[in-house]
Image 1: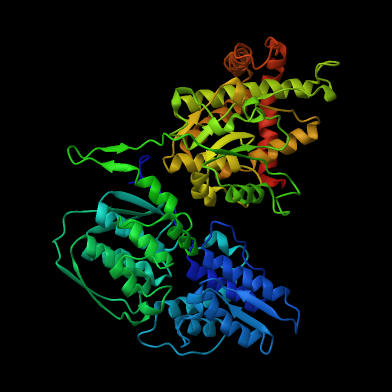
Image 2 (image 1 turned 120 degrees about the vertical axis):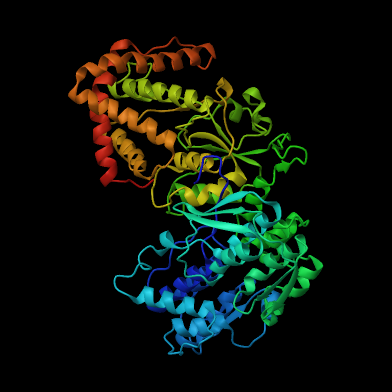
Length: 613
């Protein structure tokens, strides 16, 4: 059973599967799958090399730099022989990659199979070769589940899960490894059996993934015998687990381990990273010191691992009562302001791409998000963001900070010169109600809304949550972020102060207004957070009920008008505006009468029409 307090662990996609699909796409001339910066570096390297090959002009020299990616090297050696024979193309990489043994490997055999070579099945075939056969069969079947948008159906990586099994075996506890299921194509799925049999880590598969926990109901073993010929990537985790638990490891089939990203036999013995991503993660999970500069290699397969590890290890186990205590970050945070701008930093791929690009480039602990059409808060204009205060001193602990917004009519569109238009007056009233609801629920620990127009988030937490932001949906970078933060147990705080209030403008035409609302409504079917779903269902149900029973208006109007007035009074008392609250009761009543129709149109339109940014 998964509860709200469960620590959720995000896993990267399986780079073994992703790279085989990429090569098949190149072979068949299909579009390459979309990649994002949170994917394993090995996938990005092969994707970039295949893109360069597609743009390559016959006879032109080309140098492909493959970093330390052995899969890309082996796959491309075969691919060039089949598809670019005789072309002046050079494969280059880090010194360690160029030192690799030149003998054929399972990756070479896999590449030959993917190119159609009729290699017979052997009795003791490597799981990676079997994986290549199965992916090729699935890819070339009709209809194929791996064509179209295969990145949406990629399995999480069992090889990366090994380090969380190692962590639980050594430290105890319980983790939910998101997305893992027993019917995996990956050979390293066997890690669950190894840790259950030898180290007391049990796995329960639930719809959300693999729930792993340590049990003491296992006879203590003094030695473990394993053959690593078919599972070389599991060696660092298993070897260091044995060392920490004072278990002798009798390892066979280790010849290949000396020719991986490092000599893993020697690296484990000396507790050295040696620019090997799996060594770095195995050492961290076993509590061996790993310098931050040595952790950069982890991006090769699991970019989010260091941040997730730091987050879950902020809990100290007390020996006296066993109760955890959370360490608070009391340092003054640094903040970068980020404003995605269409056509400047979205590369024609939309707002979420622009946001990802800017956040990955940031170097500060926090980022302060703004839309490009908002009037920035005074704190941002005054340059106070390097020392951002927060009510109740929560900022040092918070991972997501919800900030206030207010909507003002622009003088260029009526505003204070000539009276507001009805559309603008209705939007301002609606926005005040939404803001009051946002702040009230968040302050009570049940946040249901936030806005990317004015939001502060811890950068590393955002990177962990990035895979859950639904890149296929143009809207929702803020709401999906809120969901992901709540699911992972991050701290959410609120600043409801004048200096941190940004100003937004209403839409100036009914067409623009409904386009915006339909875009917002289009993301609703993807919501999974119980607070958001309950609040949304209540609002929709009350408004649709009003269509059939107008008397419901007598209940709804006082509540929602109260929210509008309270937000305007708060703004006035906080000197956010010098004007008295200005939404008259008849404007709010008109909003109440029209709202059910607006809700219905937005929901229907959002289901069938999603506008890009």
